[in-house]
Length: 293
Image (cartoon, rainbow, N blue to C red; front, side):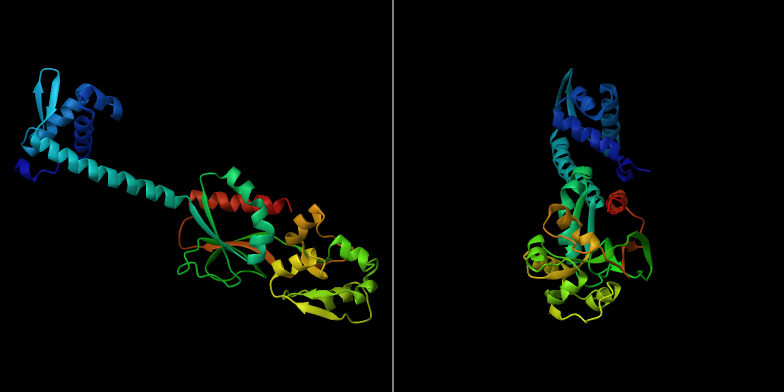
């Protein structure tokens, strides 16, 4: 077979480009981690395959021929684009897009963002907050934290944790309205949400006979809890979402009476692809955080 039909090895092209750029075989060898003689041999083999001289050798002195210069310029551009593509591929493996409810993102995840970043500085975590079930294929989402009785579909499912539902309000509100017994709640503003556990169920658990007077309904848990922080009434708080506010003194639980939530938190992702190392790390971090609750 004619040498003109032989494709030169990629390694020979890489060695030649380094030699042309560095100016000496010795410098190219140091960059590539091979000997000076190894560089010389690779270049000679490439010249034999191409049938052209790429360097003019004058003792220890070395200069690139016009043909070599043209090849070196094109190879430098090609390698630059190649290494850029490799870097992009590595970066994409470090990107994880995670979906969750707006209330979970605002009241639970956001305060822990710094912890995640300090433990996983190499991961590019992107949060999308939505009250709707995402489509993993069309929405470009890799995984989700779902709050439900139990996810269905062709999903990899890991239970993260459960919670309780309990009345919460600001300390000032509890003091102002004298909330000392469950019966005192008859005179409070009851903030209503859309979770299955509602005020009638809590009043039944508290063994209160008189039905409560319902207050304003706010569909989003983050809005309900913010209203409670701002002394606007008493909310039925999900324990995961109110833990930080209670610890900081922004909210309090005036009564030790709670309901078991019928929903739980689940980590879900499609079964159609193997998880990346970044995805595995995100899942492990979430499991650890829920274990601390």
